[in-house]
Length: 112
Length: 114
Image 1: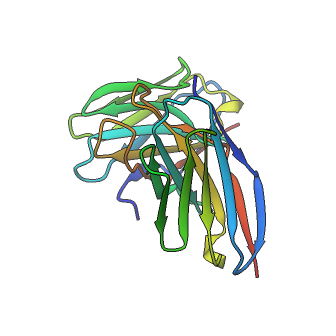
Image 2: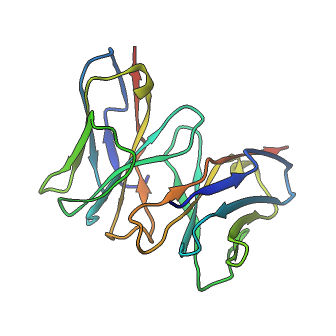
């Protein structure tokens, strides 16, 4: 079945710098790739998603890129701010699969 | 606030017991998902209901069961509890039956089994 690997497990960056989190998936039929942010004590919240017919999507300081050939997708956060500190999860799904397959999460720490 | 409510917030119980976790989805959402998140772990999908019918099953143990009622609220029943069942249990809702859309997560129920 589908498997999603997420790296790194922890990422510490200086405030104002960029952060990149990468995920790889195993099944080339996957066609939907969301990213969720989980703040301490809260449930995850969708921050951006991308479908397989698009290579890149941006929303202000956040962008996601998808490389279907290499079967990986990445979350890019520019000009990081203290409020970006959280755990970020990637996920993948395909039409024939009725569930999201989740990565293990990345704890992002923004250093002042 | 996602609009998804979960009760109770915290639950402490003993091994062998049975508990029921409750979820009310956002107004208008027909899909309800249940997830388990153990300490410092990712999200494990348990089960999904859409408009009262079971739609997808993940790694849900036989000791666990769920249902979605006509008013669309859902309950997750955990029985014969073991220490390893201690975790955060999240409910999420969405408008769609398919997973390619935003899921709105509740604040979670923290279950501690002693």
